[in-house]
View (tube, rainbow, N blue to C red):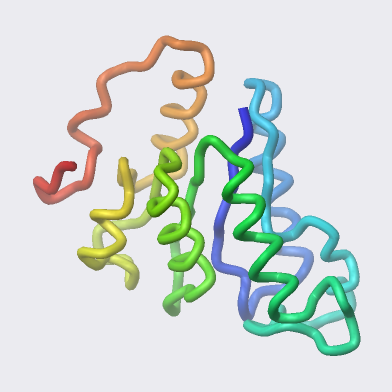
Length: 164
């Protein structure tokens, strides 16, 4: 099963982004998930001190349009879109687009964010099929989903009483 993983990247280092995606990949690939993420083919970012929120003119695969279309295409290829917004210090415009695209084409959308997260907004909550407050809860859900032993997570759905 293909899973697209969105996570705020702008302002972070290449190493921290790669480390994050490798940790999640290691946790989910043994459960049969194939991870798709925005860091595919992004090794040219290694020397950057911080990842920019826009494209790199001198790199054809990293032009603004190339980045947007590649990520939108990967979301279309996936069955599940997981948007991890934990510990975000500023709004991630990229993650908001990824969530909106996924919701629009009816992908199974899972958002992870704390109760006081900067992204807690009606559009985000309602675009998510499920909202978890911890990464462990989301990973537990995905593990159970992959092996068909899904437990009842209804108390975790859209905290605050919102439901779909």
